[in-house]
Image 1 (cartoon, rainbow, N blue to C red):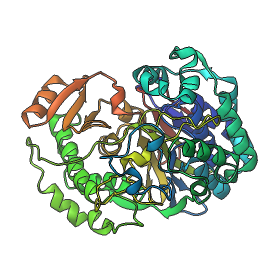
Image 2: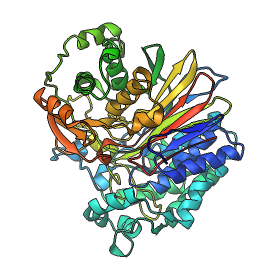
Image 3: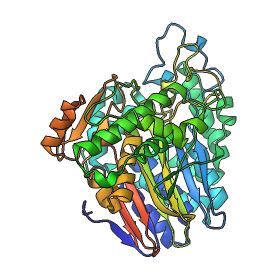
Image 4: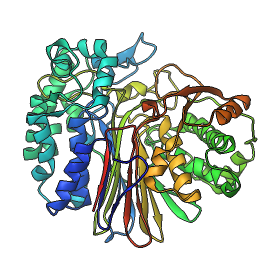
Amino acid sequence: MDANRPATGTETMVVSPHYLASAAGARILERGGNAFDAAVAVSACLAVVYPHMTGLGGDSFWLTYQPGEGRVRGYNGSGRSGAGATLEAFAGSAAIPTRGVRSAVTVPGMADAWDAVHVAYGRLAFADVLEPAIAYAERGFPLSADQHDNARAHVSMLAASSETAAIYLPGGRVPAAGARFVQPQLARTLRTLAAGGKDAFYKGPIAAEIASFLQERGGVLTREDFADHRGDWVEALRSGYRGYDIYQMPPNSQGFVGLMALNIVESFDLGTVEHGSADYYHLLIEALKLSFRDRDEVLTDPAFADIPLDRLLSKSYAADLASVIRPGRTAPVDAKPMGSDTAYAAVVDKEGNAASFIQSLYFEFGSGVVAGETGVLLQNRGSFFSLVPGHVNCLAPRKRTFHTLMPAMALREGRPCLLYGTQGGEGQPQTQTAIVTRMVDYGMDPQRAVSEPRWLWGRTWGEPTRELKLESRIDPAVAAALAAAGHQVRVVGAFSGVMGHAHAIKIDEAGFLQGGADPRSDGAAIGW
């Protein structure tokens, strides 16, 4: 698609980071499904055609809007740690491993989320909604350049598990981009799920095989952990930004960081700040750094800690934070690196239904472990738990960890007008803030908003750093000014994958739709 022009539609719009998933959502809409049917179809297809970023062994978060309800709802599709996930279980370790069987300490929440959204709002049969994903897994699809590049970067990790290597390194080699990639085991698992619903995953043969595989290899999850899993419908967080009502997921999601950053930025008149200038980047970076500082002190499972959201999201607190930002001078802030493998997508239909959702395995290819013959690549999200007693995100049984996933939706006059989100851990609130300011303050359409040069402060995951990565399309004079202000600048590629894959939908005053898909991804925006 043209990186400079948005897709347009009068009735519907689908955006996702893989064109086959977007096309599947569009087909479901053409068959009479609504936005929620299409969204589940897109999510399931991403679990097949973007397996390095997301999958059935991972988590997801959803924001929904249905005109009859007239409100934004959230669904927390993240899993909790197993009953045996104790500090004693990891005694002698400084941290939970980031790869391997021992990194899979939380139950995957994806299948439950599909079921919950479909039961609440879907129109078509669940099996029909999953059929495109099953077909791609069974018959194959052209392997994306993104999957090829990520597999090449992680060959040794993929080769460490025979079950994983058999699928992702067939014949002992990374498949070429464009080669047919099939996943027959995953197809069988999806068919079992389509026929038996979520109980087939959490209480039936799928859970039994995954748990047995993990237990035989020293893992902590049991069949009982799967049977006990439940996702939750939750009240979405809300804050205002220049006449828009912005919605995010509550903790254990980091969604409130996106609201905090916008609250801080709202204290400044962007009408006097040129977009793309050093002042523009500096302001947004400093606002986000301040938000990250608070996030790292409080974010965990709210069932285990009191998270002072009223204070953090108050406009007066935002004004206090804004007052410490100095033009041309950075402030030292501590924040931790986050995982990066994620897939964001959104769907709007002609009835006004809207779904904004995001899903992940945490690191690229998650734990690196495919569970037996299920074809399910397990997430390593639980490796972010701390093993330090007293830490706010300390490991405990039946606990959700600090989560980076944060789909967003904005309403105006009570109706959805912006749906947006991105891949990229630490980069998610940074890119979201860029998208909102570009569309609201600078009048950009969604395609330009996601295509414009981006930055990333800190690391998506890995060793901690305060590095500020700038895409090379940013004016060298701007990069020099940011370096002079104290930022640790490093210039990366023009459309760098490290910036994540962002997508957005805009619904204008006439009800027409515009969609933007990130040129850094294999995605597409499809509308009509």
